[in-house]
Image (cartoon, rainbow, N blue to C red; front, side, top):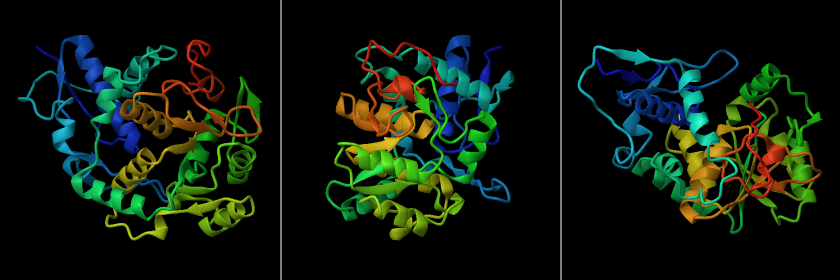
Length: 312
């Protein structure tokens, strides 16, 4: 009987969803089986009280025509159904991505092409375009990774703010990020802050003032009227805005930053102007890995020098 892989009942955030789906493809291909993407996905919404219980149709998040060019959306029912957990699918996905780390000519790889197929719906793309047009010329994007769920993840990983190890620095506060941007020669002084504002541990107005003191104008999604309420849809808008802007600051320890870098490199056929804020440096550093390396200290090395070690 042909093994048929199905998605977990609950997935996590937007880019973990992408990794799970890509991982399903990897396991199905490896075993000679098949798979099909679900019709709806869990609308992961981390708050102090939980992660929510809502689901959203796949067609309300991704453009189905684009997705169907690289993913199977329907299969006849199979009796030998296999439902792996998120971790197993993500590991299969990450293993495939890791095999491209440190290689030249990966900008337009089949893996990058598959992740580029996760295009927004037409309605969400319209929101992305509208907001992008409202941003000041030369605005950059930044992943403000100081939300409650990220800090909890950092605690589980044993990261301590400011600790340097293996060429990387644990940066878990916004002031350190802004100081590194201000110290750089990137020319970045206006930033769209990509984050889940309702999960911040510090009020956004305080974060904005701290940025302003360092010569940085900060823009949040809440500064605009957004025509959606779903957390996944808002994440798609974040991703789309960051993809359209030429400069981006984030951490390679995040799936959001890595998939964004991979897709941007695919679009422009070269390494994008993306920076990391958690290399062991007093300023943000340019990354050169096209989104394939999770260790900040290695992601900033030129291709051929960084090796294949990951941050885990």
